[in-house]
Length: 241
Image (cartoon, rainbow, N blue to C red):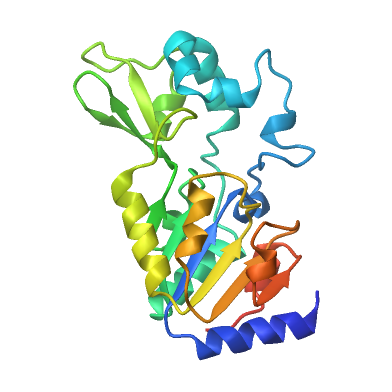
């Protein structure tokens, strides 16, 4: 761990009054949840169809049995616990330093860690709704099925997650853009910034410090005040707020 960079990050946080966090799959890998593009990630799993196909709205509509098989096996991790990154961000919010957590993850771990202002750009596995009557169901209920989950009214239940071919929620996007615009520091963690339109939100940041904590290079590195190539949980655990 580069102590000089950790000290610089600490200094930037100490000098900032309104911080916003933007995170992706790499935030949850330390909780045992696989990301997408690493060697053991979802894009390297062996299924009859590519994950991008399975997680599309067209596939959900046409092949719901395969969709739910993959979804239950590879997208829901009910035993996962928040790691040091989730917990530190919740602490930062509690102490009035963090405006919002903006996440591309659907695992709900930020909320589980205690964060209150969590903007879930791609939805959550913990919310599922009947497309016929609107009744809500949790992830445990989805996991209780071996096949296509059906509501008591007979309608098919859909996870409240954004599939390929589906738009992001406009209200969530607007709230995220407003939080980023109001921040004097933005921490980007655990994301390659390769997924749009979510990654495009970075352009709203006009504050003083842009920090990127990610194992690999990102498209925003040149704009950053500081880049740290270490696991985000290990980095944030060294920070005091």
